[in-house]
Image 1: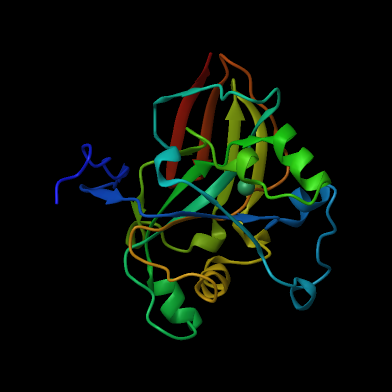
Image 2: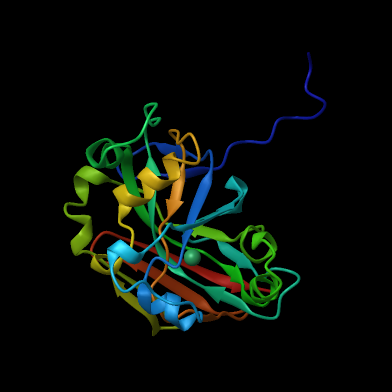
Length: 235
Ligand code: MN
């Protein structure tokens, strides 16, 4: 059978040291830092025992924007927000059955830094009505991501911090020690809901300081000491 039209190409993220990472799915975690949960008006769990279950949502794979590329200001919003996040890249399929922490960690082949761009006005309207977040989160160009760095070149991830500067002003800064759900925790929870596979990216949630971006703004996101992501919002 012949395709009715040329098949769309798979989005690919460059990998430091060579090669590319073909993207299958983008999973995202909401409310994974207590300070950000509070700034959004949610109650942060008092302890890990009280954290319940994580908040998950998706972006389409073709929402990826490669480091250095312009991000067009999206339609349908007056309040585009930045959320700087750790991005983990899975290089293997999860085995069947419940994942253990070591098996979960071993799925991760590389990490980067990304922005979970958000149409905050649309997300807030959806939240107020108890409706899904899709139009606020899963839009075109909503997932700028850095090159991916192999885990062997990163060392201890938990000791790293995230920083976002906009027009040379620091907007967000947080430590990965403060993740409510760490990377193995999240992969274990995701694998209870979805078959995780090589090519999946996970945006791990943002620390406090989310705020608006405007056309002309330049952003510089950093997984400090590991990798940076730069770009510009255009009309
Ligand atoms: Mn986010």
